Amino acid sequence: MQNTQAPVMTKGRVDATPPDDIHREMDELFEQWREEEAHVDLSDLRWSDAVIFAIFWILFGIVFLQFFTRYVLNNSLGWTEEIARYLLILVTFVGSVTAMRKGSHIAVEALLVYLPRGARHWTLVAVDGLVALFCGAMAWYAYQLGALAPGYMVSIDIPKSYLYWAVSAALVGVTVHAILRFLRRLRGREADAPHGLTID
Figure: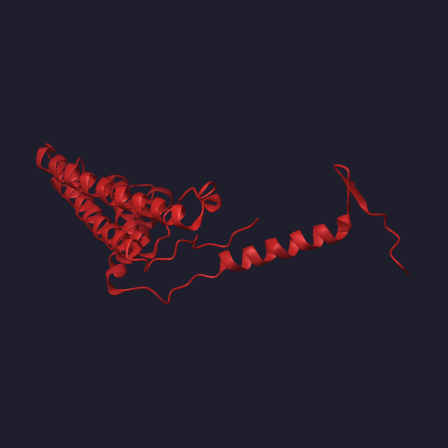
């Protein structure tokens, strides 16, 4: 049976693509996007990434211990909540080192794609330089906060300064990778393109 669907009129012009075809193309595009997002690339992991995995699994174990002692034994361990909170902070900052190395931090690229190639390159060079300066400053401030942090953790006799210094060390790692990215971009060795799938 022949398709007798009339062309679609859009703002004074005739669109030759029927709505069913548009929906099918959109479904295929989103299916492709879902497959891309579902694929986890582990080929570029390095030994330094083992630190974040270790912290994450320790956090998982402590949260499970908290759940088990509270809801099964009805006698929650008091230190689990505070330590889990601190480990979650470390997961965020230590994980950001890996994210900076892989270039997977969130970024707004809505206007960037409309810039000419040269302007886009130098805009990204400037952004990478500012990111490196900002992360370096935050590493220094975190170190200073650690030196000024008073007292110990509430539930365990560990100085609070250790947490600030761990965050400072993570920010130093972020700064190093940001500087390396800035230098690669400056020399034209870093692609001036988004890493993810673009839907347009």
